[in-house]
Image (tube, rainbow, N blue to C red; front, side, top):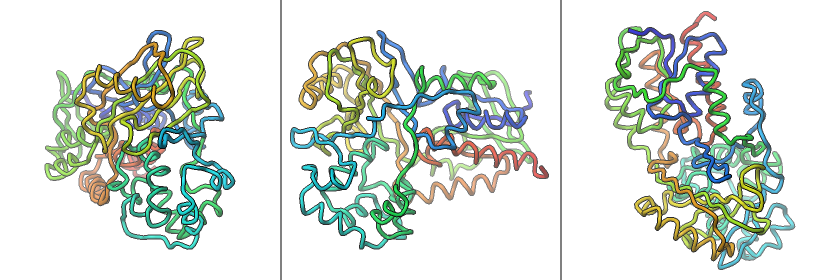
Length: 436
């Protein structure tokens, strides 16, 4: 029987960053990962001279994240300044998303009617209730703004449906800003931005460099499924591969559907509830292309008009992503509004990507393609998501020593997970050392 102070289940960014913070405080911590590799949805691949991500692509790093990376001895690489420019494909044209008041007034992306509605948004009142992103945007900015500005953003971050996503939980900073000022335009004027802040970064060897750097500082066991977890009076007993482990504290840093399985002998009702969290599928296709291409760095397609949700020219954002004379383009399909794409064969997906890239960007010189299917990709912070967050808090209160974390609790981005690890580690330390 092994005895450990803390066991972390899951070697994605949430589990590794939490374990790293605990070890720095002198905690005896071990990480168990069911798969044969670490990183979860962070997975960097090298193939045919290309360096690409098949899951999470970048990190929007604020100062807290930068400080964490510095502390861990990991040097980030900032994206090209042009990364802030996004293009929308509308009615056969690539139109830049306006980035200034002058560009907004001139853009053909929005009609005069919509522009006038946006300008009068400053007189709107905020909301306290849990409403969908779509309903809020329609009321404040109009249908066209929803379709051509907000829906592409939601597709890029959540692969989600704005009709179902909660303004309060999916975009908490925007929710708080409109609640405080009534108007998002007013919030922008007062605070310069109403959304997430930070620098877009990666690493010389991709996001996998971050995962490997953290894992090297920890005791991590891969291909070690936790088959069973039980709570006793003042400890937990875990059945892992070939042995049992007893621990004072468990940090479950797995997706909601995996956490559901792990918690079934702790609380069957909570286990069933967490399994209801929606994770729509996403397909990530990395495309190597030859030749020179437009200044486009990020693009989103017109909502519902193309199967491609969006694309990023990663080789234009970061150095070392493609061989000389070639470019790396990462394309996304699927999500909450096109779940059927996951059922297509790789050849069918490649044909869709090839056809639509030719239509949108006139690309017809493809060097290679790599298709990655994620059957359950990104948790959807839908209307009524309070019940999952409240239940997670109740579980931690009712079962001392149990802590839950992951992108289904603290935000879906890699940066969210890193920031959350500080909060989770502090809670674990307070449990282990209440007098400290």
